[in-house]
Image (cartoon, rainbow, N blue to C red; front, side, top):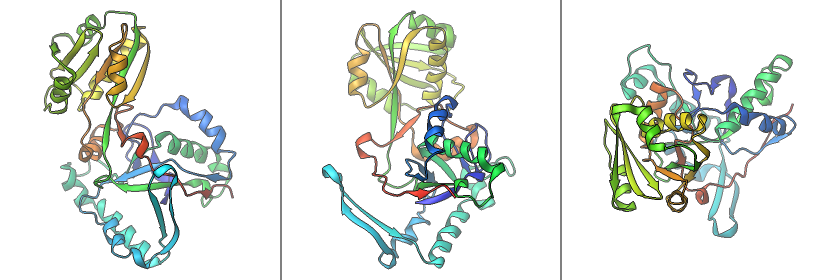
Length: 330
């Protein structure tokens, strides 16, 4: 758990700050969060931020020293959720080691070579949002609001977050599928109008075949599964403008929904609900492939924020308990 400086965070697409969003921030979601946080003396964060450290240079050094740290809690969690142990990094030399390891990740030459970039084309990215994007955006909005009235060392300048190496083997990226309800227009006709000759739609014999094809798909075409009341289908888009299939699909769905093509859209995890609801008359489900987590940083650097609801970090039941809090009033 660390405090991130909100002066180095920007959630707008195309930002070149050290801390960036990984998906589009929906501004309409901020006001209710702002009303809660701006009157709260403490923050109990649901914010997980990622850094790209394939060689485990940051946490690897801490693992070797953990027995020397002060244990601040150590207990079983409720309902069979496992065990939680927390340690405090109290020694200046340990904190300095961590800072040096993080700083090495954004060394200009290392950064350019790591992501195969042209010199001077992109500013270094150290932290990318993993979970709690709108919570961090809320903290940023409040800080910008009060900044003219307070000192630059005010506690609201910082946000308490969990940082995690994107390459941690315990961290898995899960796809978030799309489900639309009460369709008003011919969706296949709408797809043809939207993509033209770039689109092909094929019938598939089963859910298993659909999942296998989509999960094993390779570039350059984008393949997306469809669950309909009339069976399973494969949507193929050739020469896509977006890097990710979910981005290709979301652009169509945004236009389709804006034109009144369906009553509602939902974003679902796992295939059980997707199949159950997608096969109901009037509905359609879209099965999208998962994103390789090793592609996250390069995609954000090159393309900016990803389409909303691109990935989830693990199943909901696996989310950690948020035990830490911090005062955010002076």
